[in-house]
Each structure stands twice: as C-alpha cells, then as structure tokens.
Length: 113
Image (cartoon, rainbow, N blue to C red; front, side, top):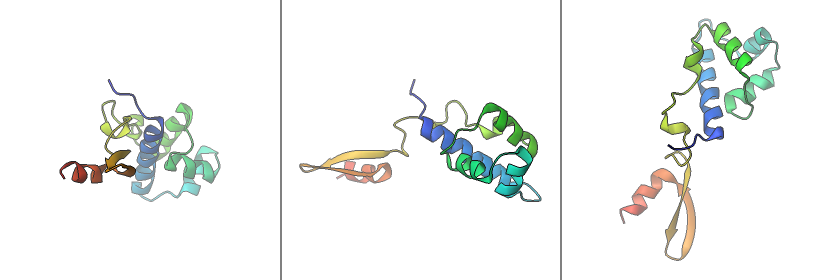
C-alpha cells in the first residue's frame, strides 16, 4: 500500500473546499466564509492552497456553511492523486550522463526514445 503524501492531501482538500465555495449560490467569497467560521480570510486562502492544515472542527464548519457532506471535502482513500510517487510528482530521468528533473508526463515521452 502506497503512502499518502501530506502535501497532496492538504492540496486536494483545499481544492475541494474552493470548488464547493465557488459553486455555492449565491457564491461565497473567502471573506464571507471566513466571517461565518470566525477565522481570518488568510486562513481560508492558505487552507484552499494547501499550505495550512484545516482542523476537523473547521472542516465540519466548512461543510455546514457550504451545505455539503463533510465527505465531499475529502479525497477517496484510493485516490491516486494524493499518493506519494503518483504521476503528478516531478520525476527524475537520466539523459546521457546528466540527471535532469522534468514533469512526470514528459518522462513518458523520453521513455519511448
């Protein structure tokens, strides 16, 4: 079983919060959501960007305010986008004697050469 990447997990949660907030009618701003949750707008910004960890209590509050199931804010257990070593990570390849870092999708192009 592959390990979950903390960075990818929090980024995925933040993206789901942003998507839910932006699809709410009427649309909620980060400022609106922050006010309802009694946190700073910068906290909402950081959580949506995956740079700040949301507590379970805050996630519960977000789900209540956005009127979405709490589980809709979390990626599925088997979601490959949150696993360490998944395609979205940067891959290292060797070209000749030089080691270069390229995005993983490009790696497949080089592998076929």
